[in-house]
Image (spheres, rainbow, N blue to C red):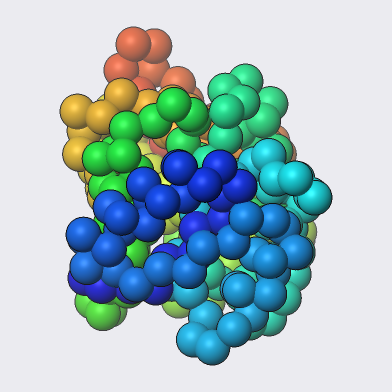
Length: 236
């Protein structure tokens, strides 16, 4: 599955390494070393299929560039994988909050990054119409419309990223059944389960925050993974 990948990285050696490995995977590449150059490169024809975005750029923060890309009509649907030397949870959450689809903490395995690129492309380029469940889902005051890609809690609509939406529908459709982190990594992220990552935990935390009190419908099963309630609790 070939694609156009925009690499936004100011470290020339790392940018060259990424470009080499992406081309070896059969992808075309563009490289930008600053935030300003990244915005220009992202807006050129054709629009990139995926963007690898360094968090620390010489003229801007990666989070600000990510926010701007998600605000532009031409680039708002392009998946972004954040490359960051910051491993603290708050940095990951902020990256996801501004629209990043995934993050990789430096130093990272190039092989793992290539797998993440492949997984993102499978999710975005899949032509199978059954990739999302059909028909509206309701649980207590949570309402999910897969066809329209919309979610409501009570009367208020909640905006979710594509990954958060897929994570929610996967858990909801399997309510009452525990889903391990390995299962979710393979089925939602479409990544090998042997890759150790806190990506699942970070996305679940962010999903719960966005859902407000409805986030309590997703339970943590200690040492295993997550489970959507099988029935609403009294008073919900």
